[in-house]
Length: 199
Image (cartoon, rainbow, N blue to C red; front, side):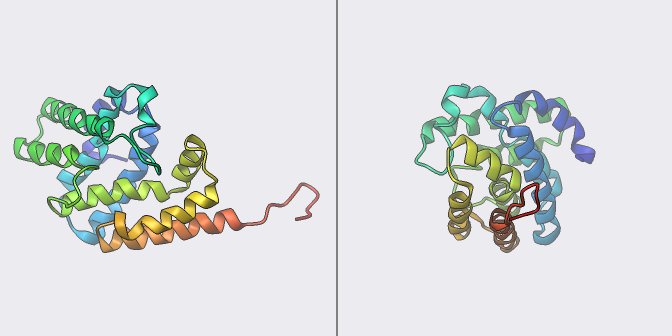
């Protein structure tokens, strides 16, 4: 799945076993690939950045994590810890695999502000930001977030649609978010069938 970035992924894995981050990263990685194809950007920057963008959550105690992200008001100071620690860990991992030092600096800078910085530094940064946000529109995220934040999935799916223009930066990102949100709503509206075949 990760091709030339597989070694980066293997070194990142121990830092991803919290907050459902491994599944989050893999889905975001798939969105990142789609965005790179349609929006441009530098693959050798965006793909390692999306693999590593949330490794810093491992440094945030699990009992504090739900206070630091989500659809409600959250503690931005705690959230900031995962960016700062993530940039540090990403730099260590990339240095270990002998990655290009210039690219390491760019990747670390993207991770350092992937949640808190509003304006992207580059198209690669915009792609990482969008890929990270697009995860929230996936089927997996709808299930996980509805459960961990005790929100009705239908209410959450509608709320997600209201965030698209404020969250997504690229044209492809906004289009993909709308498509994904409509799929989630359609899936929630399907009638269930009981074993007897009656609706």
